[in-house]
Image: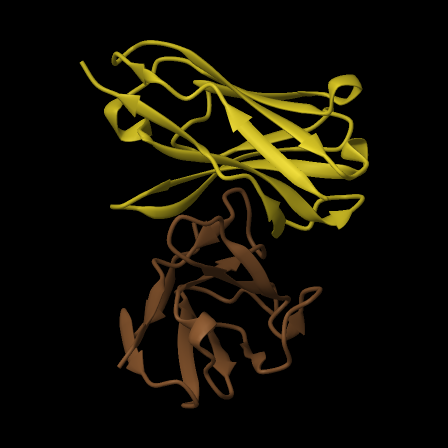
Length: 108
Length: 122
């Protein structure tokens, strides 16, 4: 089973800042990695699929990069609605599909 | 509007059984594979099961294989999860989710329900 490790666990930033979230896989997932955003009381929302492709309706300030075992989600300029928990997920080796433990992006 | 709505979550004793349901609306249900995902404070998001568009193929996490059964009724736009031999560690918020890809599943989830809570406790 592929283990995804996200860092940091919590990231404290201000609106307008640039956010960089990391996801590291225990073995290569090639480019088969997605990012989700989850706000309190809401279901996860797919942001990025296959490393760098934005899902429908996702603003351009969200971008993804990486390959193999190291991946990054970047939010270029934080908006107030971006403060949430972010999860990565792989589909390279399944079952099972696996998720990271999440990074909480909080307002500084 | 594309929507998924789960039901069936209750408090059940260890060793008991439960059937969760998920009703889909706003899209052509039998065009998509469907997933069950559970969430707990301790383990975060955990993928549970996937069923293909026609119900002919199903997949499970090792933690539920042999105890849970996923199924679907495309005539009713409905997805199910039969849960047997329940354990305390099966407690959590169970959500159904649509696979991202129209056709063969890709393994990402682009539409989620709000979830139904299962509590396994004596």
